[in-house]
Amino acid sequence: MARYVVNRLAQAIMLLVIVSAIGFAILHLAPGGPLSQFAASAQMTQEDLDRVTQQLGLDRPLPVQYLDWFGRMLKGDWGKSYRDGEAVLSVISSHLGATLELMATATIIAVLLGCWIGVLGALRRYSLFDTLATVGAMVALSIPTFWFGLVTIYVFSVKLGWLPAGNRHTIGDGSFLDLLHHLIAPALVLALVETAMWGRFMRSSMLEVINQDYIRTARAKGLPEWRILTVHALRNALLPMITVAGLQFPTLLGGALVAETVFTWPGMGRLFLDSIGYRDYPVVMGILMFSATMVLIGSLLADILYAVVDPRIRVG
Image 1 (spheres, one colour):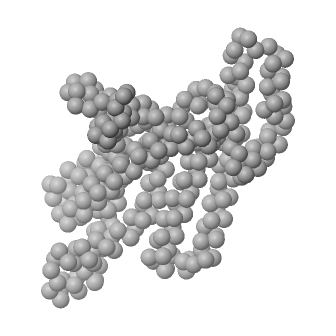
Image 2 (cartoon, one colour; image 1 turned 90 degrees about the vertical axis):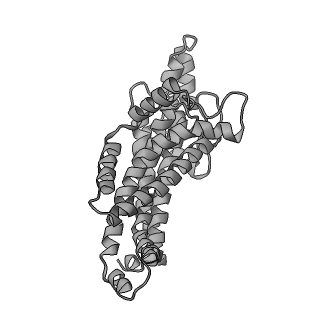
């Protein structure tokens, strides 16, 4: 088990280094570059730009800049924002709570609703419910998140006036009910695709389990159907979903970026787009590395947990 964990950890670290190198190169080779925001000021002279270039170390070769940035990042110094000079980690942490709140809510909705739809679809295979669930999942997977978000705003905010059109809370009101009121729309939009995916995976997993010999043996012994489904079938059907949870994290993170933009939710996704527009490259790289780290950690934990519950994985 220890060897398996070490191998997976080494792969994750190597992948993280590759992601950081590619991201750093793309940002610094993009048109305009890190100095474009400074050059946009009419008060900046060429001498001023040269001085800023030297202060930021942008006059050095790109590989040297990357190694210096990567070394400082490992020590906890992720740089400072070009916009206000605040530490990148502080900027990210100030927006992290909103993103985690949105992602956690959407995940709870998707897991509960998706698993229920998947189990019921497997037990009532080819029924009207299963057919509608299958068609609904295909439609949900085909709808762009931003389009569904705009439709939600138009219907439930503009036309019906039931839900706020955006933001995390009403100005001057930070109560729990107000926060929950603002959270409903973006969480449901973000959970749409996740629910469809969880439902399809759960249905396939449940169908595979209920056709196993030990389920037929349990029925032959006269065990109650509810006990067979909950103790024997559902328990084993949930095992593959551990891996699915790890694989879903990147999709969830990408969907959060879109949902936060549509609903002006003050999370990391909104910060990422604002930072790109401002060409605040230290913050962009910080968010990129933080997101990549979270994705790799989620995938690593899912693999380790699956290896714990299924020793056959460790053998390979």
